Image (cartoon, rainbow, N blue to C red; front, side):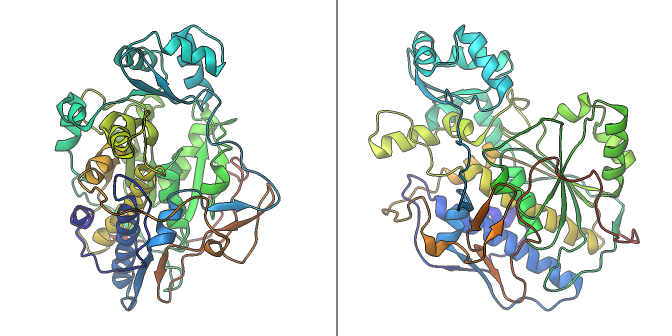
Length: 456
């Protein structure tokens, strides 16, 4: 996983504690420890730049790092909603397999309209069985839905999009530009305290990135459209954040968003390349509104190639790029076998958080402000050469000993949270508040940090 540290211009100066791993065709636990370790090393570098002594110990607990790639929250007196909609999943086609991702209503509607059937799994399976996988994938995507045919890694390497992704860097850094970092009073214990992070991300990599930054004191404000909901992941990913609703299609919502954007330090978003443009916030407009902003951007299938604008999720990318196919062969299974967790999402999330810290560190050294772009498909390209040879031992769900003793009271009920996977001496990974509902806060920062700035 040296490529992670090369992309961040860092040395892997951390220790891995333990040797447990997931049982998988690919080295998921190695990816987990490396991506979390990279964030820890990036944070240590920022702390040194802030004037604090370098941490003597940066440790990643392999078991906990792996488990955080799953679900971090353990409901005590309530239950999380199902992770998948009733008709989401893998289906047999005439010539192979396809995954339909129908968790969101508009994606579900698109798939059902293409298939011409009602929302009944057995009926969907019958209709899917009459299609060729590539043709159904293309039809669902054209209708505004999301789907992925099962491909081998060789197929993906020969595919125009696979070729494009292979040519992209793991982290695509933008050209440095002049600007002013906001001077933020901080402490060794909470090195990101006062850092304003504007979060326009959804399932799942982006929310992991901003949750990680919140774990060291960042002021994260997540913005969603009115009535948007992700009930099956929100209790897991809004830990330590504030969440508001804004309608960017209204004058009032646009004005509020412009105010937030112009006063943020970091802008993290997972919108497709043209989505913000269609809302009237293209790259030039954002630069004019917020010339001192650092942007960290995410997409599914990469930033070039014929699928550069395609919607996607971790589970779909695993189908497209050969991960699920390789897992099926490794497990001698009769159907696609993905990774045991959504590792592309989580790893990319930690890399996004690390990229944000590296951008701040470089800017504070006078090297200019720099944006960064990452993608799930490029993280998959990083993982695939790392095949696992030994039997893994970690299973889900986690054991009681994996959770902190403290109770996390949430709006849904009492919960426990996994113990932190990252240990930095004198700088605990801890969150200032429990998970919250979307839209539970006002569209404002809620702090009084002064706007003094220093050249970058």
